[in-house]
Length: 217
Image (cartoon, rainbow, N blue to C red; front, side):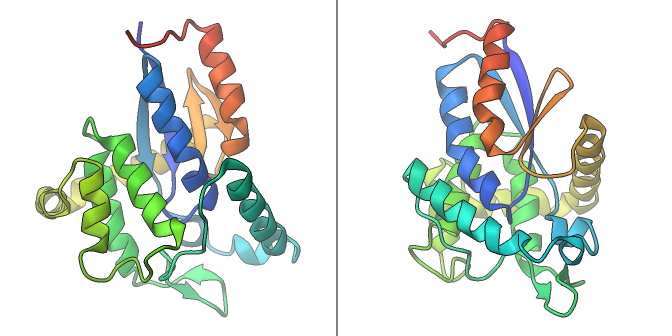
């Protein structure tokens, strides 16, 4: 029996980036349906989140993501441009979000396709890898999407007439995310049990194996 995992995930989360290749490998090796459910970044969906944190929060986060990327052998550099346009006075996202307007509709449409995990892996590996910045210039993003076996042009064409439906799906993802028992990303949910953070990936796999996870034939 195919097992199913919902993954609540953000384009601005370095931890979402760092777990995605592991989720892709999991789905390729095992009989598990990994369902990507994009949500808006905290700076957009939770006003005041970053100003409420201890001043040590961001310095520690930056240190942690760098060493984690080094440990996993993955490149990491904060994206240029940042996927969220930030009001530096409040640390909230501004009302206009051109990069999310570009990424989120494609992410919702791609999540419906067999290449979903490849899309998320290739796109975030490019955006967070720091190899060819700015990531939104020219055909760079299109080439990353092509590596996943999809067409940026086709994804955008499919998304264009579905703006309201896509926004409703994102809002539904966010409601389901909180209902699962957490607010942060990535949160992986299996049979109603949330596993928050890339550092709970191994625990998720342990639980899946308890429930009969088998390798693909």
